[in-house]
Length: 256
Ligand SMILES: Nc1ncnc2c1ncn2[C@@H]1O[C@H](COP(=O)(O)OP(=O)(O)OP(=O)(O)O)[C@@H](O)[C@H]1O
Ligand SMILES: [Mg+2]
Image 1 (tube, rainbow, N blue to C red):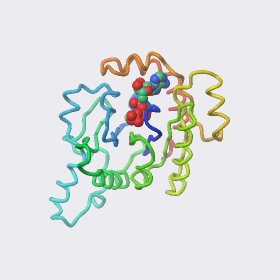
Image 2 (cartoon, rainbow, N blue to C red):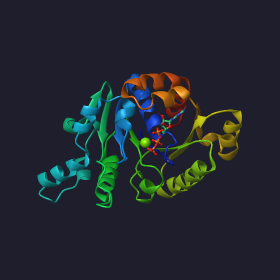
Image 3 (cartoon, protein in one colour):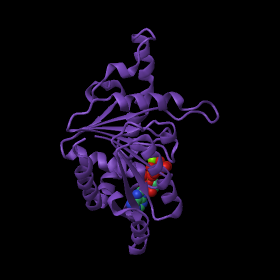
Image 4 (cartoon, rainbow, N blue to C red):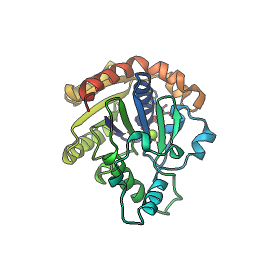
């Protein structure tokens, strides 16, 4: 199963990606967790030590190596790698989770992320996935990854929303683009749902079948967010709602 997590800035994409990754890993899936956001903090949310995260080479560098091996003629797509093949040098292992980051943040005004985006696109397209493997992509905020087609080959696009008008407007755009790109499954996760009224706001807006689940607003999450060593506390706080979401996701997309 190949899943992309998207949504407006700050809605909880990274928090959800990290916690879904953990649940899949705890259920004996091999998880390939990809930080596709150049302004990346998935490593923190997974509790990876800062020194290790800093040392991890961005996966985009692999493209140069592959091009070199193929004397400039081949492409990554033709290699049809499996999750296992993705070079150990580029991934950090955390139990059943393999973490990779696509690219590093660049200097302001220096360059675009075209290379990272196109490499990520061919990586998603070409990765061969077994039944007990899952790829989860923490995308950058907004809709660029969709307008560029970066996430076009995922099986399932999940958009995170919070109870705010702007976040559901982004979700609407994401839904439309997912349909244009032919992504088979589109789902919504409502995060930071602070009360019943906030839940009703989401329920009234989306089709019931599009909603994968609701995650309550949690002070514990805010308090622990800054500390890599406190990520287990976040998982504990979010566990009941994340388990429902995980089960619903398996029901909807488990055969992919
Ligand atoms: N259910 C929740 N309750 C309270 N705070 C939350 C919840 N989910 C996420 N947060 C907090 O909201 C902030 C943004 O979360 P996160 O980094 O996961 O969002 P994001 O969508 O990945 O952001 P960005 O667009 O910057 O990548 C963090 O401080 C996080 O701890
Ligand atoms: Mg994020």
